[in-house]
Image (cartoon, rainbow, N blue to C red; front, side):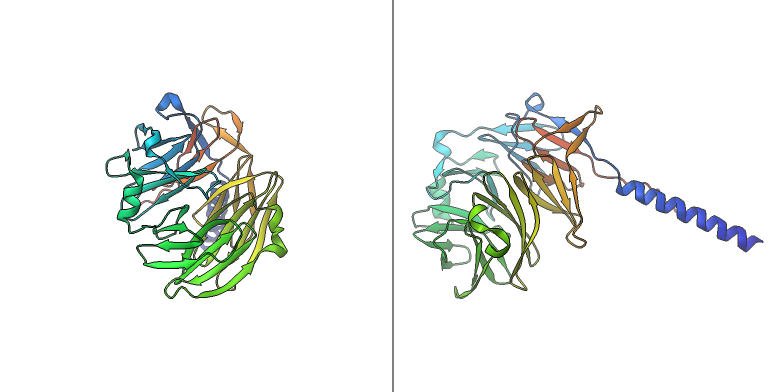
Length: 343
């Protein structure tokens, strides 16, 4: 009799635990809104990054904002802070280097922020030369290890690595990254060219044209590395593709196609979060499952349909969303529905 009751209790407890786990998985994020009235320079949040010290860095139009967990402060650039990049025609990119600098790249120019002083650098050219780059700089990139690469006259230079590598394609170079002693160059024509970054030897090219329709999706590109996988967003005038390049197998795969633009992405807790013109997507790399969060729930109970420029997570797991006109949205980290009692 007692064993029968124990089995029944075990079944009930298991049912409750499963119910609570399902409920936890379906929990809806609730977002708090921050805009210029809270100290942001303006309501257009372009990029968001979390620094090594835990501060959030947010770029608005022309400004850099810092959030220390309680307050927003911003610094404003002047014309003397701009350094020309004649070969870069894209949108905002943020890079951290290994010298406590933040680089903000946008249409034909770049600015540099001294993170120790939280001030724009006046003479950017002197910083670039101090890093060992003495050629004319036409564009610049940061890799996943925070090393800066400078484009000049058809070549890429990385002073810290003492590397000088040719640019493989005549197509526009959209992005670069490193993996397992190789340098990957991602081009507008859908080709990734891979070099041994120790010897500078060209290893292979891999084209996504069969699954990409490269010529029609070459307007802009964003890449994100997770191990040997490189996720890439490719936009054309109206629609977008999410691709994945497997550097181990040297293969491209199309993951998602949307009739509107995708803007940025970040991996958190094993899920790829993708910012889009209409809310954001969640993609599970293991199962391939995709979920579209088109409407965002605000703390006042309203449902918000908005574009999402970028997504980031802080050290506590809080989710930050940057929008074009509605400032920042923040959702606290999911909390566990369980409480552990100790004996």
